[in-house]
Amino acid sequence: MANDPRDKDGKNLQKALYLLGRNIPLRKQLIEFLKNAEPSIEIETSVRDDITGPIIDALHDKDDIYEKSLSDTTRFKFLFRTKIARDFIMAEQEHPSHVWEPQTTRLLLDLATDLEKDILVGGAYFGDQAVLAAKKLEASKRTIHCFEPNLEQAKMLKENFKINNLNNFKIDTLGLWSESNVHMKLDGFDSFANAIEANAEDEGFKTTSIDDYQHQFNLEIGLIQLDIEGAELKTLQGAAKTISKFKPHIICEIHKDYVDWTNGLENTELCKLLLDAGYSIFAIRDFNSHYEMGDKPIELIPVKKVYLEGPPHGFNLLAVQDIHILSGSLYKIVENVSPKLLLHKDPLLHHPTDGL
Image (cartoon, rainbow, N blue to C red):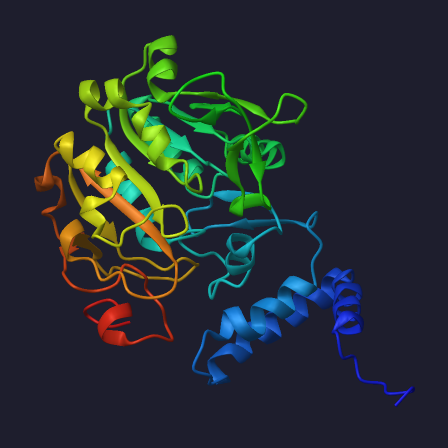
């Protein structure tokens, strides 16, 4: 059928949605409609990932900028680049409690409260968690040190500290690695990009180790947070002296794309490094999204009791030297469940143990 009007490859639909998205008031209405429609859509997979999310993505350009504020008045400017931006825009509340990963955010802020040492963040992005942590550090007059080699996101990060009237921060576009002065580049798009070694002619960035950075500025580091797409192990290897001296709390991502946990999470190089350094390790049960959790406890799974089945996926780990800091009502130790909280999956494995 030479005149078949159907858009078989979807290109016409993609273009139409993009053009609709250039009308900002109309785009806002469409997003609101899709957000309100989600509870009425019943499918076996994720409504957000498979239906509403792709439509919203198609409305946008990678240079579209939003501004949104939280319930505590913290303001964020951000580019529409990944799920982080999309799900923040789709938040149920106009002024939500957080930007991304509700339980990891709450955990970070609890550990940062009254912390008498500095925080170091690898992969600070536009500050979705780092800005909130910096606010917690103001009382103790400590500094948050942010590493973000993505220059566009580093610029947005600086802007978000500025609009929230914060000055207890330092931003560095170096990458974190096991050694300093390695020439690297980002491979992939935006928050999904991982660092790989670059050729001399490639544009990229230099690295620093945490130990070298700590020594250079004579820092006391009380917490390290890493979300650097597979560079976590190398970075922790380059923090051996800092870990031995200061015993900081550590929050870091671990992902099956970069780590082989076939023989158990506790037997991975990353976990063995921390276990050998005297840490207790837990997987943090969380949504890799924006979802309001209210006052539900932060559920933590001991490293030997984590349910790991499923397609390649990642989640955050918490490593602490003193498990007694987790004994309050904010925390709940659970076993043999998945760290991935997923609305459309088996509630016994993928929902909080006391229900949604």
